[in-house]
Image 1 (cartoon, rainbow, N blue to C red):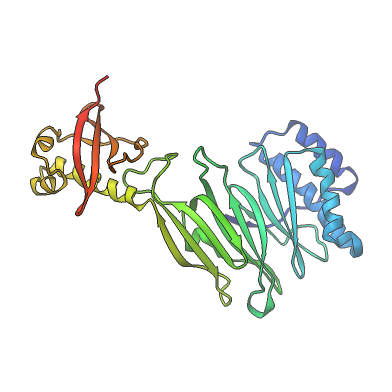
Image 2 (image 1 turned 120 degrees about the vertical axis):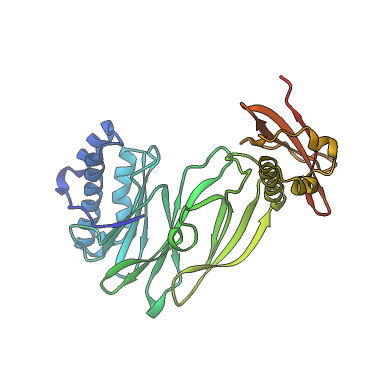
Amino acid sequence: MALLGGSAAAAPADRLDRFRELTASIDPSQDDALREIYALLDGEIAESLASGGVFASPSFLAERLEAFTETWGGLTARLLPLERALAAAFSFTEWPRGSTVRVYARGGGSAPLAVLADEGRPQMRALPAGPAGTRQLLVMWEGAPAADRARTLRFDVLREEADGVRVAWRSSSDLAPEGFTARWYAVRGTEITVRHQERYPGWAPGCEGQAEYEDVYRLSKGSGAFTRATRREINSWHRDLHAAAERLFLALGRGDRATLGRLVPDAAVRARLPSSLRSEPACDGPPARDGAVAIAAAAGEREPWTLTFRRASGGWRLSAAAPVVP
């Protein structure tokens, strides 16, 4: 996420016409065209804010921006007023890049006070006042959903101060440097609830039934940061199962008979396991009625195997193993 300077405004007379020309033939890889689009939008907003009165109201500005979004439906614009500034979130429905949150001084000016840029589409939500009554807003950056409905997700808290605005908190710095891979999230008042995934041995993208966490984060009044208040684990058995499978593969490679004896109680099953057996990235089968779970593995030059685990009092144990017959 970047906090950047603003762009200069274009002449007002031909903004909409120029916007129409750009969006009729724009290539999202052309940064110059993208910068010009934002220069047009900056100029439109700055002109209204400088005029004051009804022309500077969020409702009037929304109508002005609607002319642009109606000209090209690929643009989405949302406004959120602060005390001395106005925040605008812009995103493009057809592009994976180029979305920004731009903050403008209420008195006008040729450039935004600040521009935040990140991957995904931004959403904004007003937060309770921060230290000394400063206005704050929460920015949510939503990535495109994958096949399993998971999406990348990041949060920023933007705070208005006497000399402008600043980013007071970032989830990508404090909570999840790589961002959340979230299946679901909700914002209620000063709480963010996120159901997200974390990679572990045996995790595969797009698969159902894998381990997830449902975390609740609460806003701290003093710092303006969100901190985790509670965590609930979902499908933790899947992580535990693959932790046992990972120990099995390591024990086979090292010839660790003691560990193999614990993980594979049946001597006949142990005897047929090749030392080259390793994990194979694939979705596991659903648990059977007796609780058995089959996972994919491979040996040698990608010889596929199926390993069946059952949960015992001491954890997951391998109960059956066989190569896959074509």
